[in-house]
Length: 109
Image (cartoon, rainbow, N blue to C red):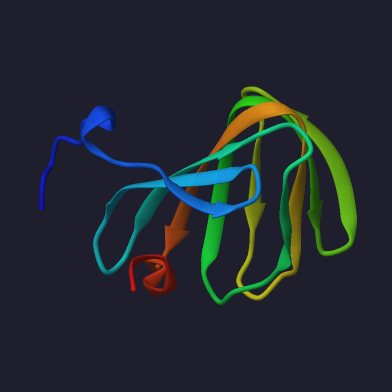
């Protein structure tokens, strides 16, 4: 595993209409992922057993967690406990930085 991760060395993966992700680094306990959104793109409501912390790198997102919605902007963050339904709508083009514990095996398989 590399201990220095260079952004330009990692390819973007198209995951949905207007949504791309870049898996930056992971081990069996932790994963860091960048997710780029075009305005109007959505991260559909879903849940998973992972703990997730997300930083809003740029843009504006309507974030829904467990039925509660909040408008978050650059510099904000949110926490998602395991098995809690969540999703986002990108209001202005932006990027989210996701941290998962443990790693999302479904992202690398």
